[in-house]
Amino acid sequence: DTAVSQTPKYLVTQMGNDKSIKCEQNLGHDTMYWYKQDSKKFLKIMFSYNNKELIINETVPNRFSPKSPDKAHLNLHINSLELGDSAVYFCASSTGTDNSPLHFGNGTRLTVT
Amino acid sequence: AQTVTQSQPEMSVQEAETVTLSCTYDTSESDYYLFWYKQPPSRQMILVIRQEAYKQQNATENRFSVNFQKAAKSFSLKISDSQLGDAAMYFCAYGGYNNNDMRFGAGTRLTVKP
Image 1: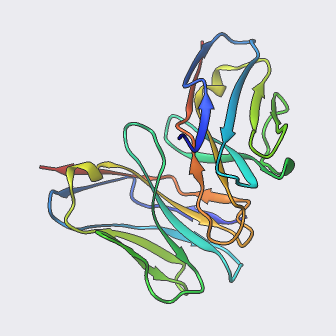
Image 2: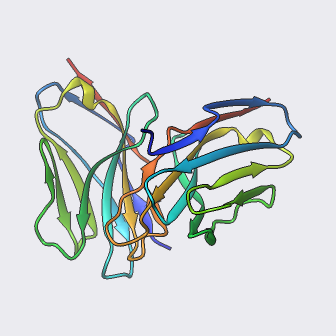
């Protein structure tokens, strides 16, 4: 059983398009995250949701909109894609309590041409 | 905001030898948690080891151990008897008390030479 699954694994699209990445976790965790990993491998938090409520929004452009229909899902929608959006996007989840590590999905490599 | 610094962009080690990866962090909190994650070429993020700041004893997981120096805000990872499969990017991470905000260092790329 996949604990944190995100789809698609790869996404190639043109500038200006709108795309979504889906994430689901079956661990019963309360907190979910989106991280962006750039070409230099730097991992930066974008959003954090706890029980469907937005907790962290790290100076991410408004073109990025997370949606959490329930605590097991956190989808990421991106409008008007730009070249600089090319990166690997990781979804993760945790219990959100002390000492709980993040459980990561396998990442979505987004390439904007 | 908390920051995590990994000062070694790349490290290499001979198979079966020992290597230490450095990590420092900056925080004003007294309760927090520290983690090391491994990212092999498959890009999967794998938890290697974790340390609670309130514990003085250094965490150990098989060949992996940490040297946690709270006063110095230092959290290094020691890999003993290095194996080819240890080759990966290693990320140090800081988790606050409520753990809604986990911050990562820039990573260290470890190469293991046969």
